[in-house]
Image (cartoon, rainbow, N blue to C red):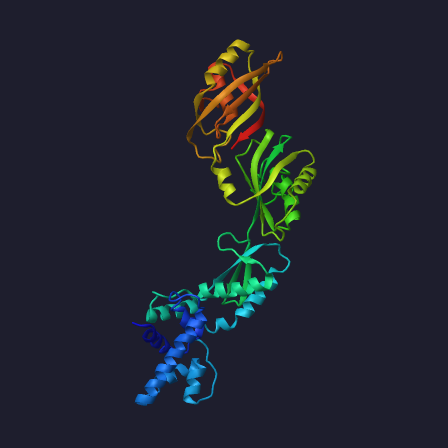
Length: 431
């Protein structure tokens, strides 16, 4: 079926605007807008209609065109205006309206790129399906694709920003049914490393164990098990700097609440959600965070990254180095202790989920490697200072204690003497 025959079938359904008619042939020819395609097709149909009228005295094609073609009305010498398009319900007459609405919504936001999306109503989707049933889809493009493009061009002229199809700072969604536009602002992602310099602070907010976060007398109606967290100490300055709605914290693993995080620090990404500002002095932000944390937490090496860095942090099995202060139930000789530590170096450890975390972790047996474990000092008081370098995911406290046989081998098992970690410091996280 040729272009004109397809167009005649479409016209049988009712008046159609130039954009919607031309859109059915969007993949034919280049350098034309759909509106120009539609105008060209209507012109050809008027010429054909006039030929038939003059040769056969049949004006049916011209009369079918008249509700949507000024040239057809002129040929028939009748007055009138174009009627509403049965496909888009005259959405293409509102292109400037949508562009103006979007430009107003974007005022005050800091961004470099944008993209337009369209939420099509059920009626418009149904109309388009009827159209495709008549005309097919071989050469067509979707209504929302053309709306996105045409409104996007107009917005770009108004705001002097570029369209980005891959990773826009802001997506403008046209809600045709509600007659309003909505903004989805892409988060800003900042990578860094944090040091935790005091014990007793979790990485992220812990809901109160008693009330499960609802608030009760035990937690002072805060809903929190601990007054503050690394996440919360970082959050405030980030929200202030980017004028963000909220933040989300993504760490490369986490240390125990009673552990310090020292050395080069633990990698993290903080996500500033729905930010008004996207540009910031990150050295200044680090200074604000460190001042706010008052010596409890320190951040360093802040830099902007893309969202994919979160997956990199979460999926990487980072090797870690720990400094331990270990106590023993009975005195132990330096020679025996060194011998047992040598036995653990380069060894695969089988660990059943520790008792202390089995309430929130699947009860499985996991295998992790100890790359090296060495004695730094055995004091006269009987404390051992030990350095452990191991595969990420190893429960180091249980490597020492044995966790009543759930970790094997363990220092306790090899010594034959109960050993416990009194203090644990993370000194390096390698990614």
